[in-house]
Every structure is written in C-alpha cells, then in structure tokens.
Image 1: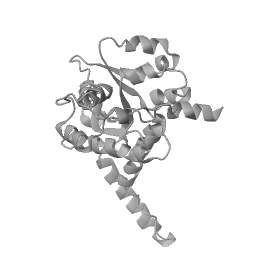
Image 2 (image 1 turned 180 degrees about the vertical axis):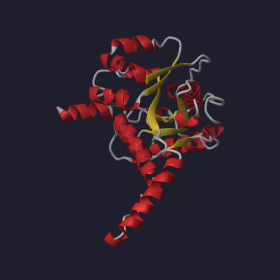
Image 3 (image 1 turned 30 degrees about the vertical axis):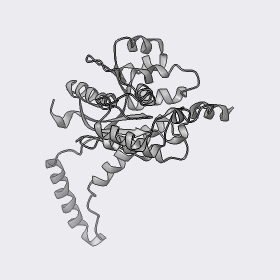
Image 4 (image 1 turned 45 degrees about the vertical axis):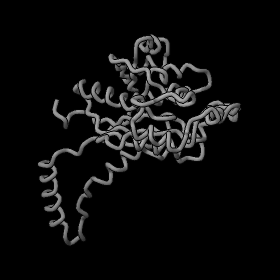
Length: 278
C-alpha cells in the first residue's frame, strides 16, 4: 500500500511521567513499529502529555519538573515531542478531552492548509467567472487529493486498559468515546491477559477492532514507582532513565521520602469529580 493510501496516526500518551523512564520511550517505538508493519497506518508523530498537578496523585511532583524531564528525554527524538496543554490546566482534564483537544488541533491545522476557491466576480463578468471556474476545476483534477486529517490514538500499557474496570475511576461514556472515536494501542507483556479483559468488557468488545494489542517480546519492567523507590533509598537509576533526566533529578533533588508523601490523604481527582456530581 502506498503511503498516500495509509492512515496517518499520531500516538498520544497521557500519564504522570513521574519521572519519565526509558520504558515510556520504548512504548512509542513498539507502537510505531507495530502500526507501520500492518501496512494500513503510518505513524507521523508521538506526543507525551503529562497530567496536571490537579490530578492529586500520591507522590506527584510539580508538573513544571515533569514536563522539563520529558522534554529532556525526547530532546534527540525526531518524532516524539512533549505537549504542555494538559499540564497547564488548573483543573484535572479527562483523557477523552485531551484526545479531543489534539484531534481538533490537527483538524484546525488541516483547514489552514486548504486552498480557497476563486471568488466570483461582478454580474458583468459572469462568463469570465465560468471560465475561471472551469480552469480551476481542471487544475484541481490534476492536483493530488488533499490528505485526510491524521488520527489521534491513545498509547498505553496494559495497566491503563485494566484500570477501566476500577470502580468510579473512569466514566463509562469516556471509555466508549476513547475506544470508538479514537482507538487504543496497548502494549502488553507476559502476565497481562489483555485479550481476556477485552472479552469481559462489553464496551471494549464492541470496539475491539479499534484496540491494537502489541506484544512486548523484549520485556522491560521499569516503572516510575520503582524509580522513585530506588531514589528514596539512594540507589542508582542509571540506564533506567535517560542520562539528562537522571542529571536533572539529582540537580534538583526531586524525589525523597517527603515528596512521596505529597497528596497523601487527598482524594484522586477522578474520584473527587464523581463525589461532586452526587
């Protein structure tokens, strides 16, 4: 299939990135390889969107630092970038809304590149206008068709997929919107029975063709939680995070027993939102 016939895809990863790790970056590479190898898609960009401070997750340090670390981690990437929109919002933003924001941004950019058709002249210039319109139409036939707007898809690990089953953490309508309107690219590993989880969920099963499961054959068990634990204990995190990220963490002494206690006792934003609606 020619590139012009393939659906262009933008991979969007939402999360704490507290801190960003080499595993986060590997997710993008695994997803890109898988999607491109289907022959139906062409991944053109990856976006890392750190959650805002209003998420109120235990141990969540300032978005300012998390964004900078993500930017340092992707400094040498030719296709993965960091977007700050979500992190700058004063209130917590649902993942479905973040997806919508980026899809609308792509659509707006596509509209800006479309050429305007010639404007009709005065009544006395009707023949000239018809000639111009015919000439314009002939040129349009010779021009390549405008490309479709790229599709934003949510990139995640199996843990996010399984979190859909956590009571009150996700709105059912948000889950449906994510899998129906955008789609998931889920990186799975041994021990994560993602296929079974999809089977047991009516919403996921209905849109299973829009959920791409990618096997992680070269397993990587790095997690932000384990990185923070190692830092609290004074242990090395070299080769677990990009060198520039490690240097930034050490320079600003970001993770400690005190930082891990941040937001302790505070209700997580999605759960607080549910309480407020009652």
